[in-house]
Length: 222
Image (cartoon, rainbow, N blue to C red; front, side):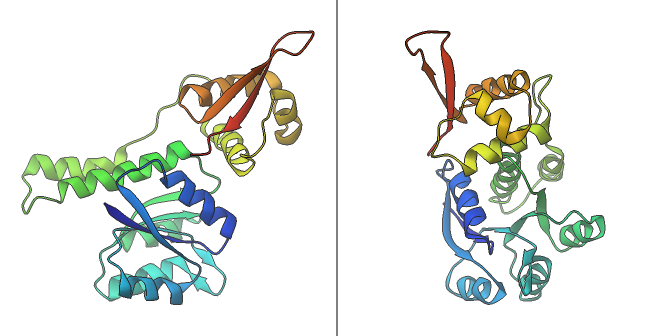
């Protein structure tokens, strides 16, 4: 079981990140930290395998936290999930050992790719030694990309999925979603069908007394 620490000062975002990880039986969220002080208090008491970390944490900074973690000889893997998109900062994070960088808003599929990278690397590192083929596999895991069906745009998918995940208590039809997201119902129906196909949404068909059946969608409460 891999132990995970979420570092995020927004309680709602921290909750969403935690919910997204519930599908993994081999990951356990140990705690949520809001700032640098809390991070090191938790690291002193727990052996953490993976940190999901924001960069902007009020008076704290995620990349500076990463630097201090490395200065203490702690080799915990770190995935950044942040609104930061400055290339020099991303390069700095990677240079200090971040294994992936997700720019908000993101979707479950992109997080799955990052978690998959973490799991693959750690499976390879179980062995005491690696041959060249295993080394090649370890470093090539960075190039894994999520492929989407024709007509599915990643950014549009992220926008729809993030809205539904944040409003998971309600059932939504295409017309209501169109009003909220400013996306045509024709386009929405294509994305909703795709999200149902990958088991992200539950669909409920309402027949009513008259008229055509209408589909309502709800994000899975896992």
